Length: 414
Image 1 (cartoon, rainbow, N blue to C red):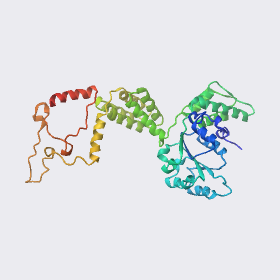
Image 2 (cartoon, rainbow, N blue to C red):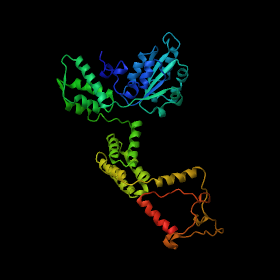
Image 3 (spheres, rainbow, N blue to C red):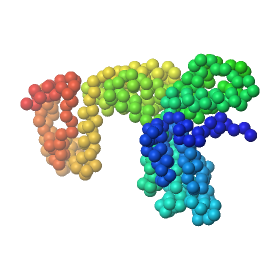
Image 4 (cartoon, one colour):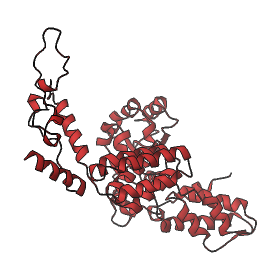
């Protein structure tokens, strides 16, 4: 019976697992837990193809518990009840080790149905997820579990698995294939840290080659496979966050890199929104012209569409990353909003009210001083409500533009 290469090559011991040295290397915490035989409830969190299922399977082999597997994309309450019904029977004398893949697809009720049995130890849960468990896993499950993060596998580690896969594929054939120099390295570096993706590439190359696997074939097969991006997952928001923080941190190279990742994934709108936001939030009053410049670049990008949209957006990113920075406008509005939400700032100073605010026959002296009637177009009067008349929301930044404005008004208002 045919068995996919990715399944056939699965390691049988922790020593055979590629990557994850931070938790599985000598002295790694997860390795020590597994070797102790005292298996707690655990949640494995990380991208696809990084070994979560493999490690769970190895753990199951080392316990005296009956292994049950569920995938939350297809399982439901009925499947959970079936496992619960087996507890305390001859089918599960040592309890159950439940491997629940893609736990993020279980709703709160489904996750809660496991709580009683996790609590009393009859079920040991090992769950895996590609999403951040602190957002998608019910708090009561989290509090009873230890979270381990699985990271994308490095190209060097992935190449070990690729070479092992080549050996297995050649062992399947009567006449082994030869590989052009650089093929295994290309597959490993282009898989984006996903070993399963690399295995699938090896399998497909062997299925379509006659006598020799060329580097050109490997490049053609993997030209975009290194992209790892889920528009609804953590990767999407991580990339948007990284773009914004690179602009704020004045690193044009990083900004262009994350922009490229977003555009290669087709997320033109997300990139445009973050770039527009950064112009006001992070560059702000230090370089006010950044706003119209970036708006023009974004408008051009949206009119052009991809792939040409990359040109004005790259310029916008470089302008923002290399511009002086100020968040004083952002801080000012957030302080004002905080006062409003605290219930402060009701009413208006009399002199600022609409001149028609009073009913006919009940008009009162407004007392408004028209600034244009005074030197330098400024006169001292109260603008904030009485409760907030001494509030200070805006503080001048230490950049050239804001300091010039400060000097101007300090001279006038002295």
